[in-house]
Length: 255
Image 1 (cartoon, rainbow, N blue to C red):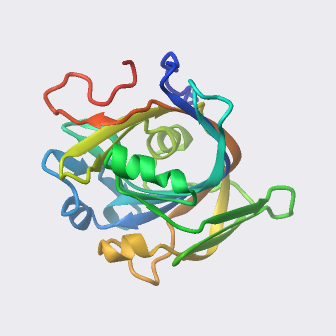
Image 2 (cartoon, rainbow, N blue to C red):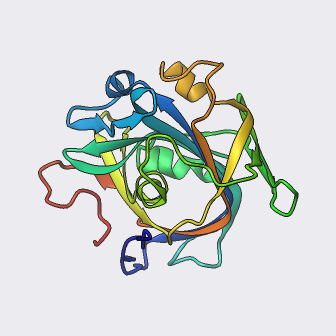
């Protein structure tokens, strides 16, 4: 059976859309208990069984936004680098991702920071890739974060997953996200994108101090996996909202 993705919610005039170029998910295996200490009440790490024991995953998701725009203002598009730092969790039993923060290489970062209270910051970000090289190459430089990866010569079995359908669904296709707002409350938003058809890369160099400062990895930690794709279309169901656990449908994928 092949993972077929999720139904696309009807785009609304106040949603946003973008193409994510040179998109890569750089994941690390972490201790589930250490991750749990970083999460609010009601949120739990999505625990997995790896070849040598239990654990959980976090990812740095890096790409270049191309033509990010709100649907009511299509003539104003933004191109810039972005990194999302996320963990795979359940929120009161529902799967999704917890966002520790986002780095954006554009002054528009002030909108999510101050209007929506999101944990975003400004940073210089450069994402480069040569998809036609043999092997393909991908590189990220962003302040104190960096990663260099090359395409693996053969198919890779991702440790902790039962097969392609499993990791496509859990690692590449979470559609709900939560984050700690600047006022201390929890916010939520949702996205949609088609099923990824990523290429497997291997990191020859990687450093993500955001996860180091959280006590989840060390400077010497090596990535669990790198999944990358030349481009991916995204719907972003803006604006984010306050998360209310009592709601039957967290997030707002069908507002």
